[in-house]
Length: 320
Image 1: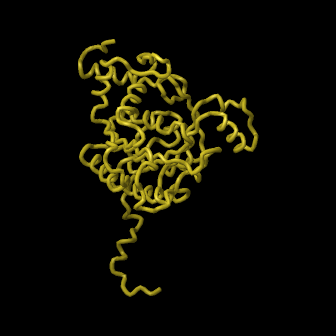
Image 2: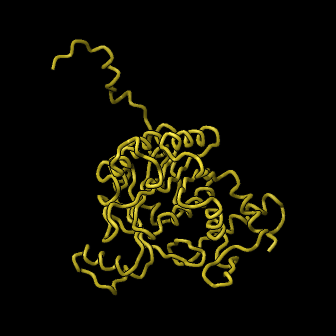
Image 3: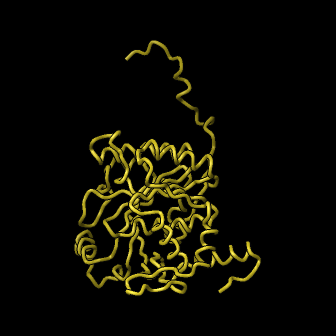
């Protein structure tokens, strides 16, 4: 093909020595708060996108709700879009995660635990304050409105972490009538938004199948989606179906008494663009009272962050 004029094409090609330097030491990494994750990938980089998937009840939302507390403790602000939960439910979840077993009360019917102490609630409200913004579900869930809200949150409120939980609850028909194609197209657009605004965006996506040992290609949007984002994680919950499917995946080379099954929850790093990590299964415990996901069966002491905050602001000892 003959090109009649070359005007304008020169700017499309940049000589190597003219490329602006940006060493990894200049990246902004936000730690996950989990040593086994952060040692492998360094944390979550501003300007990138992470996709989270897993079967129903695997702990996707639970993990990301806990991540909110990790980010706030590092001085970051978070925007949460959670169309499946009411805002007061999110508040109660965070109360429970922060308070931990020591400060939680068992319900009269014995089915759940909750934070009953209103004084602690007030201090937690003050601590989290405007470090977390929750999208009001009565407003439009179209992609354009979500993206405009993300832009506002970054530019006007200083938010740099976005959690979108989950894509199935958004109205993505403007991209495609095929829901998986639509999710893939949205992921591509949201990746550009993350780069432009220099925020890290976490997206929860449901898999295309509901049984078996999930793989990266089982996530909505398939290979297209995986190529568009920077990190892909799958969360697995240890139950009878997981054991069976994992043993089959390992070609029956392990048995049910294998030490891998001593854990409750697994986070699989399926893809990490920056460090090239893939197919790494990391093991965690789930604490049913506080609903924390932890590495060593010990609660994360989020209440200690609250105590330090209270002491610093009120200039007096924690009242309990």
